[in-house]
Image 1 (cartoon, rainbow, N blue to C red):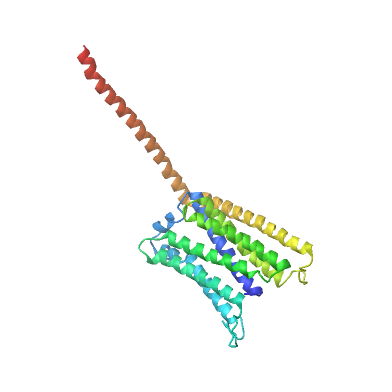
Image 2: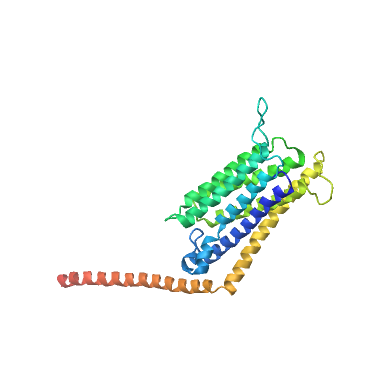
Length: 300
């Protein structure tokens, strides 16, 4: 993974995953629907409904993780050797083995999500979230040790990535206790987009600079511009998330009849609840009058 393709491939996966999740979360916020048990999955029982249930983020993780595992194993000409045959034996390719560990956890996370959603009788949300937290926690540990021999621009690039992964781990841990909170899902989506776009940017910074000349580790201006570019990524992804929400809101209000039906269903609900409360007040008043009538007759 220590090349251009190795950085841009997981970056593109995270970007597409973040965009997919941004659409799902925006729809749930607009329609006030459940994020874990959306209503459109329970209503669509036909062929397309079953297909939509099968094609979800879990399979995206499995396919992407498997492809990255194959690429990582085949990227070395002599193969991914674990230890040397000499005495004393030495570990070989530590960074490549770290990459392989990340991709294996990504694939296992996808497998657990697919099994929980399609195989188990009752979906286990805690198991799904726990697997994702474990994967991000291991990713954080590997990244911290990954930059031990880095310096200058490369160190700054990976340090900013570590910051995003740490914040993502905190958000995912909070979701273990509040899995339906929209704010946490929005922040999670935002952090996934930043991770993906920054990995794509890192591929160009470290391996294919746009200027055609490598970045200078001794030049403080290059290191400062790395942070500036990261801030631009933060602002761009925030605008992207806001744009997806705006387009989704416009689409559901103008072209999706489900929103109108939902609004029409909510109105009678409020009317019926207020009417029921009014009826209860009337019944209470009638009971008070009935109780007071014998008392007045006895006094007379």
